[in-house]
Image (cartoon, rainbow, N blue to C red; front, side, top):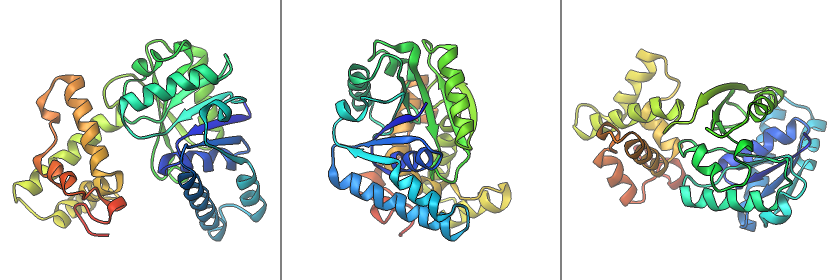
Length: 281
């Protein structure tokens, strides 16, 4: 495998492109928005420079990584030579389904289609294609260049060969693959989102302030980041969407998003990306 297409130039997409290109893969980074592609390349260069300053990479590796990335506006041209496509767009099922349909239409028959989704059913995404045995989940963690985990999700139609290929690839790029079955929220968000929601409920009920709630989890449970700060980092809108998927998928009200979370979103306070969530940035 040499050619990998990444669909989506946002935080996750550019992070995945960075890691793949650094490990010698030819990356086609696809986004219909030129400004998003320009920002993605600027972010990749900035993060490579940070790695260079920390002596994690050398100058030649930085230059090679940047040279390994090509930008495209169209899926049809961006996936033409790909052996693996990783979708990394917004967590909206209909958007991802359409991207999988287009990727399936334009990619070579042997190409594997993966999604970086954090909660949407891989089996359902596979239904938008004519190659369900080649559809799999690759849930990277943010920031991608730093975090070691890739949660690999087996859809009900996925083949053993596809799984083995992606596990091996994950190890090749220096990450740790953890394989799970397809279920709402998989493992990572099935455990994480209820904790974040409970922290928001505690804040909503006035049991304590945001900093104290986070400090309790950092100092008492050895979490590197408190749940409210982490929610801000993920994006409060993203947290809300995942909780809704969990509630619907399990038909269980325990996943119902806290009213305070919805209130923050209604006010446009989505966390770090808007400058304010549970904290100001």
